[in-house]
Length: 483
Image (cartoon, rainbow, N blue to C red; front, top):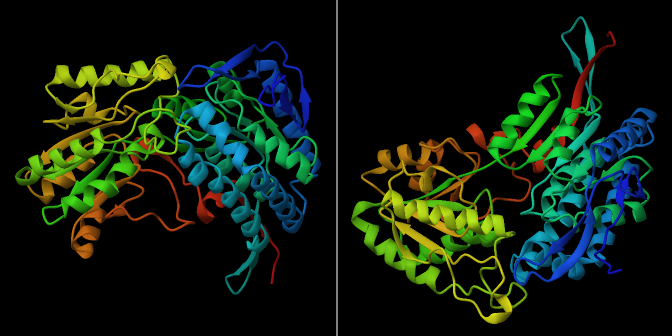
């Protein structure tokens, strides 16, 4: 049995045989080589995991532990993850297909940082506040929300779970994590790390599963809070189910982010900075800048520059140091992205570079690759401008003036991310304030660590990261104490 075989599920702190769920093979999306095997949870496994979480939470073994005790466990877990960083990067790339350098740069260090951040935040957070009106006084206290169902997607096998596990555990919650069947293996690193760190029994379960398992978890009466990252369609279904018992939700959903290139922008500086924001995780990122808005007078200049840069992106083995774009995570995802490129052609968009297929060397001939594809002459009403493609596809849309650019950027059911590009930062910020989206970058600059992450409209409800991400796992109680 290889180190990546996980024929059992991690339920309440112990490894248990699945109660009827199947064991699947996980294939490398670049070569289709066997990566490992993983058990998928059945509804009975979900019941066992939620039962363990409920029992542990109600017992107070973790929920009433001191912030210092919780912080110490999380820091020890982060130490364990840090020791395994190199192996974890290979694991992520093997499951997901993103370039190894990206796993090493972001997918592994970020979860470690999140875990340490929330450990420290739990220790310093002011849980109690006395409020007085001069005649009466109340103790306003913050308590853990309870049992958390964390449901995560395949494009962040370690990082997305960390944005739920770390703050939820830091707040004192018990957690059931359901990773997806596409990337079920890497998330178990949290089981190994927290088990070694001394997390009490029952507090954490990790049960990869399909949609049936996820639906059963969301419907479970003993789940107090659902923290979900995934499609907007699934988010709507979760919200409707949660509404039946008024369960708390945090939803981080889809995006169709607009990069607004103003008329004074330096195109030669924009393109190399914009491309990584559009192509991260092989284009499979909810915050990817997939609509590029440009003045009509500069449309050809930008299209030519983007086409040259995208055509030069090395597509191939994600383990190779010079690879920029790896495969899609699955055959289904490859076919979905290629299908959207065909739809774009049918709608009247022009494929400037890329397309539905890519010539590959024999060792990668079975891989699920889509070349970086640039669509020009796109109207914002086209499906390729309105629907989330989730692949290395960029659409260029021309606008008439700044008001038109803002209108186009906001003409979307999504509002997750975006960017504004200009030689005048002040002007760019003014435009950014008008865009209805949760995050905006000026000239490609990264957000400060600790900034909230989340979206407007159908891009979600609530925020992750920063203090906001911790507050999402707390309930507020007022106790009348008198003066």
